[in-house]
Each structure stands twice: as C-alpha cells, then as structure tokens.
Image 1 (cartoon, rainbow, N blue to C red):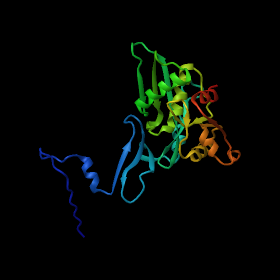
Image 2: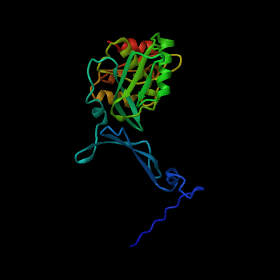
Image 3: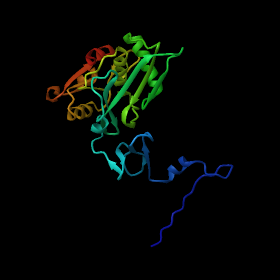
Image 4: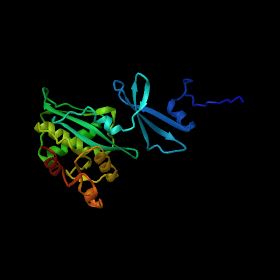
Length: 252
C-alpha cells in the first residue's frame, strides 16, 4: 500500500516558509532534546503531544553505544558531588510529575570591577538578581562588592520557584565560606519579604530524598504543617518561615 503525505506551510513575502514553529500546528507531537552541547546528558521533553501528557521527561546519556536511558536521574545528577565544599547544596525539583535531585553550585568572590558580575547557568538570571537583593535587604548578607555565580550541574534548567531556597543557601554558604551538611536537601520559594513560600508536590520530593539516603529536608513551614504523620518518614523534616531560619538550619 502506498502512503503519501502533504506538508503545508505558510509562505512569507520573500517566498520562504514562515518558520518551523508554524509546522507545529500540523503535527501530533513535538519533541525536544535539551542539554548543554558539551554535556553527555540529554533530556527528552514533549513540547506538544496531542494524544498524551507533556509533563513527563526522559533522561538519556550519550556514550559509545549511542543514547542510553538513565533510570535513576537523581543518582546520576549527584554522582560527582563533592563533599564539605562551601557553595554546594542539593535541591529537589519537579520535571513534570517526576522529582529529580540535582546539585546547585554557588560561588561568591570579590569583584575586580566597578560593577559586580552575576552569572547563572541553568537558572534564570533575573531570578538570581532578585534573590541577591532579598538576601541583602532581609537577611543582612551583602553581595554589593562581590561577583556571584550559580551553576546547575547536569544540564538541567531550574525554572520552578522551588529552586530559590537552594540557590540562596548556596550563595550564603560560599559568601561565608562555610559548608552545607551533605545530608540535607532544600526546596522552597523565596518571597520579596524574605519569607519561604510553599511549593507543590512536597511529599513526592521528600520521598525521593529519603530514597537516596538523605537525612534532613528543609522545606517551607506551610508545607510542613500540611504533611500528615511526619514521624512515618525516615528523614528529619524541618519547616522554615524565612531565609534566616533556613540558613541557620543548613550551615555547619
């Protein structure tokens, strides 16, 4: 049996197709491979799926045999994490309905220029500027004469506000040159008043951390209040109301 397909696209005034985005309206699914070109890890994400969910992702590694599925992305993301190093902490983020633990690295150093430099890889630059402002105004940690850098390991992009708390802790840890306990994970949104706001899927995040052997989880206080039977968890759960409480609970 012979099958034929016809592809139709819009043409602009120059006689060229208007762009690849136009073609997305005519297909059932659009898949993207995301990740740093210098990194062997790739994330397969559905930007459009007419007959299914777009909330699921696949994590793959490129090796000599081709693409290989990563069955436990959290363990992979944390495989090279250094211990007892200032500016290093772990966040539990949600990729669709899947909790993934990954390493956040922060570096704060004295600037050699008139204007301090800010750089973020895997994290929104404007969000980084906001967090630095909150840490100065509400918590008393001054970055005005410091360069600040944030890096998310593994090629992930932390787009949800739940990553705010881990980024804040990484920055303060590097500023004070004090390590974060290696058995702690963080998640929570940082508000402009310095408060730690609740985030969705708290139980899924805690269970993922518990599965990987973490001993303590620092979360928003409102998430902590909504948890049922916290004694049933094999991990210590601490609810914090503001950024000062979070820093005092995290740094060694």
